Length: 400
Ligand code: NIG
Ligand code: FE
Image (cartoon, rainbow, N blue to C red; front, side, top):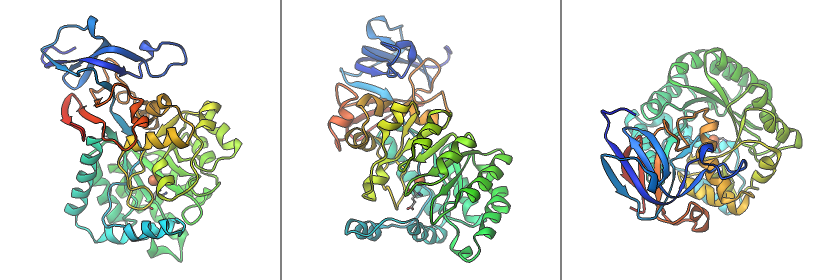
């Protein structure tokens, strides 16, 4: 603990989720729940968690008045660098039209036409919205530019807001290359990759009918790996396909969506380090069948929950909403969903400094206007996020 920082004791916490194995009640308990708890924040780090009665001295105290506290949400999948609006497409879908990858083209046109300032303002807007709902770490992607210039600028803008930046030049084949997809794959793995790699940590592909097939996806992710980017994949969202197997084969940090899985896909996830990231906002907003979280958890896979925030298939920035859907419709318990939205997201980003309240972790703490984290699913749609500390700095949530 550094003596130059100010220490703050957040105390009188009714129930505290730490995700810390040191506080686990049993070998199967992942949440490390502490009742009548306190958290000591030292600068931007967690210094201590435990029973309030045992708390060390601190410079200042903050009285949680019996509310529940959880780690800040880790939203490991979003598409925030975009312009334009797809209300009409949503309306059409809710009148019975099916979702297809083709809607992405609408956002590509609007994004290309936008100024840097407009894109930056949009990213800032949705990040503030997410922070007010308790998200303290987020990943975001390019993928609505699809030219070397527009993909690189999306990543430059994203990297001003987060370290978790993903190059998704392979979102769909650019409309400019509709007659020659192979030439677009060559661009994505060549000149575009060279321009984008310095601004990103990850590389992603939408592996789906109407986007990129397994061989194209393998070529793109392998080229990214050679440039120091690590893979994550949009896999098995709209139909069965090779994405999940490819994710496991390439040691991708995450296979995202995982809505249509064979038993072999489930086995591949259970027997690899690849996290299954489920995005229930997409199934909600496209009226699609839910991914089966229970099946993945029972097989032993690691599951993350994330928003997929984007203007087409899932225009929500709310992790509490995703938790409520996962509990209601995907077979998760409230405890599992909370873990997946915090520590699970961190695993999908291969991070150990966020998604948990352990000594040395970043001081990302959310106070809920509720006595227990279970209320996130029990009281769906209610703005329960009351106070948010990000890196030890306090902001106020929707309920504050
Ligand atoms: O994750 N699946 C591909 N990409 C997004 C959808 C993007 C869009 O429709 O604009 C997704 O659902
Ligand atoms: Fe996505």
